[in-house]
Image (cartoon, rainbow, N blue to C red; front, side, top):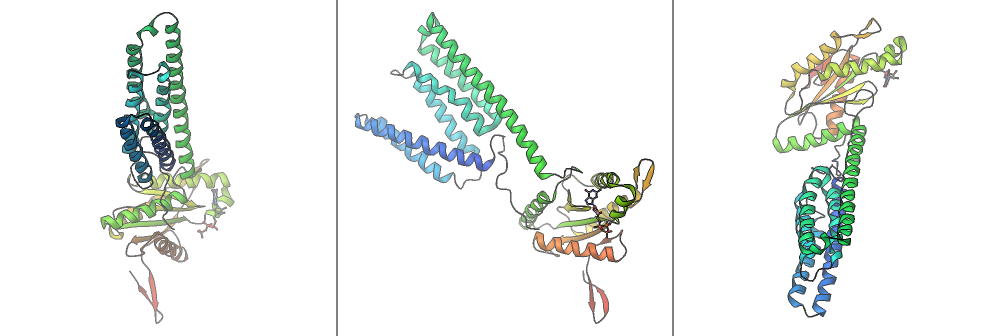
Length: 360
Ligand SMILES: Nc1nc2c(ncn2[C@@H]2O[C@H](COP(=O)(O)OP(=O)(O)OP(=O)(O)O)[C@@H](O)[C@H]2O)c(=O)[nH]1
């Protein structure tokens, strides 16, 4: 079972997925850098050397930033590094002496970019103060707009800005909720609600990577319900489905918050026990087996007996990666099936010269 890393994990504070955010931010850095570079050339041609120099430096920094963004892990500082100076500059162009009245339209970009890059909560927190300062700056710069026809223009601009913010806020809330739901559906098993096979594989890979760094062992348990076909055949598929949910409840009631239970398919489940080894995990896993055997499913007044066979493997002694560990636990599970089911197998048996010997 290879442990693939999820590259497109969600952004820490909501907003777009990490890789989408990265692509968008790189485009923003690149486009802004090139635009400022273009204006720098115009300033230089008009003989405004100091301004041209400042703009050339800003252009260079933004282009270097666009290149670096391809590699950085945490995008958040880079987002703020762009947004805060840019928004401050947008406010400055409203109040600077030769500013046109229409410079205010750039303020409408603030909620759109902020919500897109930072998500709903941080989007709101960053947008509101900048919007308030921008409005105040505009009123101070253009007091004539506060009377007569100017008041209508100002009202239009304010209402338009407010509606943009409202729409972006509602849109981002819905988008984030839909993204969360999609993620949950993609990572969990529809019948039992526990993690599905692919998210379990990923977590197993990630946990092994972490264990390599910390030096702590971890345990993988695979279990398979015994004679499950007979339950379906005798009581029907609905009873089988209820049995799967019942087993999950039994198991989850005993596991720690850091343990992970997943349905690997059909009537097979996986349990990942982090920061522990076989010796310490053994009593718990044995309790899990006994728990299932002791709690039959109550189905329409009938008691359906259940049991499961467990195979257990420890990292690193039973396998150096997820694949090896899974194969080891699976091999032990099937040995348990052949030995009569409803048991936990946690070591191998070697046959040497026809004599059975415990291998581990
Ligand atoms: N109700 C229900 N049955 C399922 C589901 N997925 C797989 N099954 C059934 O599980 C049964 C598995 O049967 P087998 O692979 O023969 O295993 P078993 O009867 O448990 O026998 P052993 O594993 O050898 O103890 C099949 O009848 C599948 O149809 C499911 O989601 N719901």
